[in-house]
Image (cartoon, rainbow, N blue to C red; front, side, top):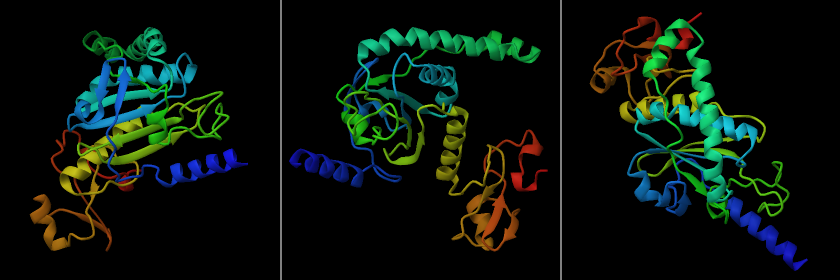
Length: 274
């Protein structure tokens, strides 16, 4: 009974202090496929996507890490660093990476065959192999710190994953000040949408730069929302424009500041689209 009580107390304490939006990420050291890192030093005051996967040599995880590899230039263009994690060993990670790269090459081939334009652009679009670090968190210290071990998410059988230890599909988007801006959690059997993660980064960066919000289904170039503390008379001073659309007293939109309107059809919010 005493051991059970201590375990329950540990669980309650652990979940009570789980990291949340706006929290600063504690610094940590880790062994990775790119060598030992200190997270604060490695992040180098840049945006970071930290994502965990349940296990090496598993089907969904292979497709996910391949997709992240394929999208590395897209993250890099946004000044975003990538880092993966699971509780597998460094040796397993390194042995698995060629499998991931092989599937990434399949993604590249399939996309290049979609239409003739992609066939042409694929000649200049050599997507890199996995070049981001993957943490080998065999002690589960980092996984527990970020609440990546969920006892009721199969295949885990205990809070600390003793028999079938596995991290869930977690995503943390961390800003240059090491503060958590987004937390996403997917179940074991559903692969993540990394295009949506890129869209979220775009929205976060626009919001941070221009002090705006983004509406539902927002894409770069769509209208953005003016915060309520800025009055109509203040819009020109804040955004260098007098043009705004008012849907309600509390809902006003302006064009995406600083966005090149090469395609005017993308300039209006989805609220105006059929």
